Image (cartoon, rainbow, N blue to C red):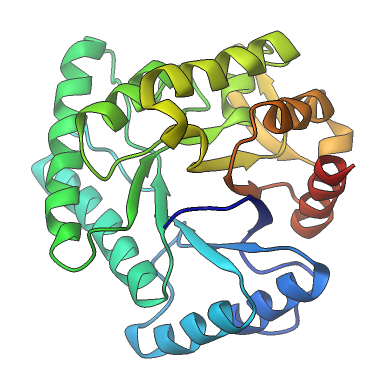
Length: 276
């Protein structure tokens, strides 16, 4: 799916919605937002039978769907059962998203577990190749997106997710600017640093990378151990105004998902800042 602009939306059903996912999609459009991320973080909670209804609501309201796969994923698990369960969580998420007409599934790839990062990279890459192979059997257009990490113990710095995107077909990064800010204990919060992230995307993936972004943003509380919890943007030190300006400067396209505790308010705040 080629994006023609940058669309802003919510991670899950807006707080103001009285109803289910279908109603949430309609409400998102009503607010003037254009993206909705299905939150499968606890479980893949949309049944196959419900998917056509979700697809119809998204299509009629011109809302682009993405999804976040469950949290219990570790593609570097020593436990064979956990490794295969992790693959299954991602492929099940992708399958339902595909039935709903969505285009991009993001996930937290795994943990270093005090191992050599190069070895971990190899193992996670193997897992992602298995996922892509399985997903291609029913959808060869859906993007599989490892997300940048929020804690130093988690796999997925910018270099790693960009390299995976380069080396495995149908893989693109999900760039969580808040995670990057948190795992470095406060870096990645200046125009210069934001520019360097987007320059790295362009250098590694070309214009295609900038035209196909899947972004997460929220205010964030952190320590030297990384991410602690999500905050409302204005209650945090996240330099979102300068960040949004770099998105305009680089003319990026794709989706920006608000993961703030006040999801729709911050999605609208970002959109307003962007359209200024």
